[in-house]
Image (cartoon, rainbow, N blue to C red; front, side, top):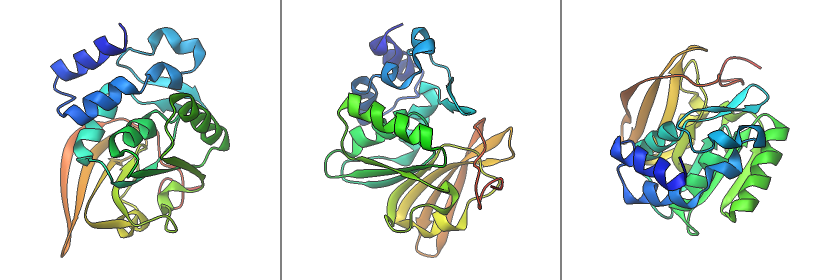
Length: 212
């Protein structure tokens, strides 16, 4: 299976619903974000190890989370969990040159990997930060959208605070082994929340996650 075939599969399965997500997933070559030893699986719809106990998400999950975020050009996005940079690249493609993505991770080697991978893709509207993702990036916020790509025991208060009115956060919430994918919209008097369904992500490590 090649990149085009992968995207067609995701569209047929209704994981991809919008033209924006479809075009971004066609433009960002997942093979650039997968360790060379797994290159033969770059276009398989499966998560893959990227080292340090972390993974690159399955393409269908990337598509689902992007669709739930209701992305559009010009948005300012926070991503918690940079991984190899693939998801940030998709976000950057969709929000375009008038938008921006700030991605934070606690593992310096992954930050460097992600930076190098995005350079290969030619995507320039993504910045990477080393730190505790559960605390967000107060100096860079507030944000129109927040994407958390690791499972949290709760919705960290700093992330809720850094979400703009009308903004959307997508975050897996549960225990270390199984979570519910929550979609949170900030409204005038609080937050609207809905549960998309069960997912499995690596744990969010940090003050607002599963500890240091």
